[in-house]
Image: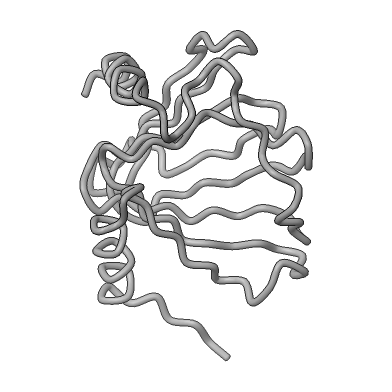
Length: 161
């Protein structure tokens, strides 16, 4: 069966993200975690904090493609120092704008939304074991921490937003 991801469908996911406490909403395209290709749409609003992490415990590359909006990919050293910042997004931000990237599983990283309505297509090899968590960076604040707003402001200052 063909799956259609209409503008209304994408907008609905974005609206759910705006109303979410975490300012994020994902939609699994894959039917189950046993599929050999895990695919999902991830709507991320400005202000959403995705704790820096890596996927070394279940090593698989992660492909991120901008569906809509503009985002910053931030890469860190093992000690939490920012190593690289890449702005990527939809073509409407310019024909030279990167549309995405593929991340090595050993790489500490996060993504920050720079525009309302930003959305990613995430693709990873499956099957996926939900009991095998991603490895959260020990040097970054937990999502529930009071330090998140200060940390996010520091990250955004590096992005130039």
